[in-house]
Amino acid sequence: MKQAIRTLSTRINILYQEIEWCENQMEEPEMNCEIEFAMNDIANFKREIEELQEAIKILNNHQNKVK
Image (cartoon, rainbow, N blue to C red; front, side, top):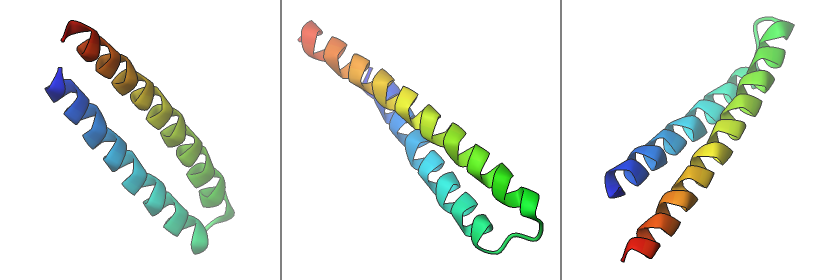
């Protein structure tokens, strides 16, 4: 269970890096559509982060009940 939590946490960190990269892309886009794509990507990343955080919470609650 601890390994699953670590894996989810690692994925969250990767998503935060992706968000940062998208934000940098939005600062100097080559085309206007890149801003829309980056905004969409950021929204998707944030939603995935929320889902992963919920999964971690569930795993932590289950782990505490098992002890």
